[in-house]
Amino acid sequence: MPVRLLRSLLAAALAALLCLVSATSLAQPAKPVRILVGFPAGGGTDGIARTLAEHLKDALGVPVIVENRAGAGGQIAAQALKSAPADGSTYFISHDHTISILPLVMKNPGFDPVRDFTPVAGFATFVNALAVAPGTPAKSFNDYVNWIRGQGGKSAVGVPAPASVPEFLVKVIAEKYRLDLVAVPYRGSAPMMADLLATQIPAGVASVPEFVENHKAGKLRVLAVLGDRRQAVLPDVPTFAELGLAGFEDVPYYAFFAPAGTPKSELDRFSAALAKVIAIPEVKDKLTSWGLAVGLMPQQQLAAREQAYAQTWSRIIKASGFQPQ
Image (cartoon, rainbow, N blue to C red):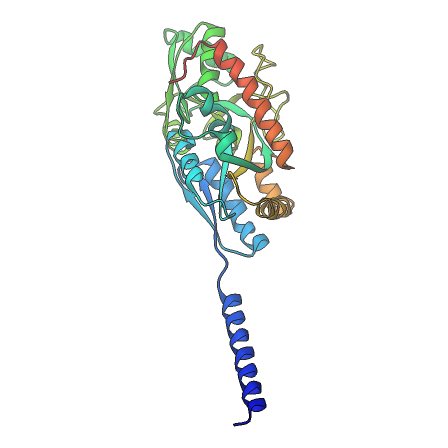
């Protein structure tokens, strides 16, 4: 066989092999994106995560899986994020409690949000609220205070996690009105809501998204909200500031975080996809109906927001006399 012909055949074979390798590479499915949720399925954070995930899969072009790592106020999920590969495949959806509050109330939460995580983007703010069970006769916050006094001044209030903003709010209410309120911590809002709706506990403090649908359905009653203004989804419910309990105007946030060291290109890709998703009318309307104020917080803005929120609550926690556990 002539050398020139042999060379041509080899070149053709090599080209065919390269095309095959390239086609095989293109056929490889992209790595799915995993969204860690630190609370049980059925709660507010889980519902928000699943609503976003449903549309993020289209915006990102890969499967998006919601993985519940419930327990310890999001601590388990945060530790899972810390050990996850920093390749853009794992994100943590969290509100203020896990990222900003846990490091203030625990000596060793098993993660350092500044060292171990990188902010990706925020997408909403919200407020916490006090609600009473259907079997509790109070129609207003003042009714609630008087009802407790009529019970000997002692009552229980459910909170989604120990040493959380809701628990500190319970402490402040107790001191302000000279009540003996016992905060009962749960492993997330879903089990707390189950007990509240069943009147196993007379009252609870959690985020407005946890309460709003049942409030509108008449299954419980929201009596007061935090923040500096009334909520559009609960226009007849006063703020605690209106009731004379100031100092809780700084509102918490919902955001995504990634393992430290995740490439900026991946963070930007996810943030851009998130911006598209929360701009979809049906998504924005759904989140808004749950009591969220929807809007993108880019990475630097989220980092500054996180730092400011932690500083505010550091002062409140120290003033309460709470000692990190």
